[in-house]
Amino acid sequence: MNRPMRLLCDSNPMCYGSSASMLSILDHLDAEVTALVQGVTSELLARDPAVDHVIETDLKDPIAVERDVKLSAYDAVLVVSNQSNIACYHAAKLPIFFVDILYFYGHHKTGPVWSWATKTFVQRFPGVRRRLMQGDTPGAPIEIGPLIRTADALPPTTRTRQGTLIQLGGARSCWIRPGVNTPYPALIARWLNELQDALPKPITVAVGRDAAEALRPIAPANVAVKSFPQTQFLAELSACELYLTTPGLGAVFEGAQYAQDMVLLPPQNATQVVQLTAYEHEGLAAPGLNLMALDPHFPKHDPYTLSEADLTQEVLNSLHRLFDDTPASTQIVVERLRTALNNLTAHRAAQERFMSTLGTPGGHTVATTINEFWRAQCR
Image (cartoon, rainbow, N blue to C red; front, side):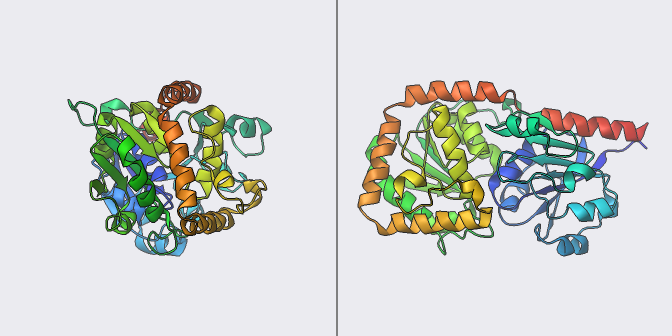
């Protein structure tokens, strides 16, 4: 058997982060890649040269996956943070390589994937090593560095750093619908109206397609709202003077790696509430921009006591309260963002320390494991 591995790829459709992490692995793989896509996963994976084929399906519905995908046509499956279809892949006897980018989040990491997978990986973040040391997860997950694309995967650029890039991610999930049940695009428009004088020009907002449609009609006239393929976004990031981002995972890792200066915005979803708490502790973010500080009615108890769906609803409720509390909440957020803009040097130093603790990018490690697996199969 001397042919490329036929690799099926399944990334969580809840955010851009899982698909961006997937691409950081695919850059180093010797395989014919077919990606299952839905919603925001399509926006990245269907537009990237690292992916050979795509299949549209409901990634949260194993019945749909079994209907739409001939699983026997593949040699292995790479799954990033989506456990919805693990039983399908196991039943089809597909070797599973599973990556959890949110291993620090949530209570239980004992599902069947940890026993069924050929190899599992967890992305390093505050709290991950402690959880690994507790030994509650079956198998032996491999701890890896941040899943971000390395410089050799980026298009060459000779541009001089200029302007402001604002990153909001896919901004959509099964619970979050921009322009329908979340006012976050409108809040961004308000904050930008007040901050324009402090931001280098030109100003570009990078965001998923649905959120872009919600934001364009209300954004300041001199703000461009775009949905970029991932490599183009990273090229824009490496050429900007200032980077503002929601407190995601990959977006913050990429900013710390490629941006000149980075400022973190208030959260827009459940995991970002938890992540911003960690970033504040590490000195990457100005204090007072998390929802617990901005909204006196936001639950004060440990967010881990709520499911992601319930915490997401609390976040949406809080964002609506901030939206209704105009201009008071706008003034508070803008003042705290100005404080962050006045402390860029300190934040830059904190970013360097933080990335040093996370270690080197982990995509190559995952890809090497999969490549070695296939070479063993071909002997």
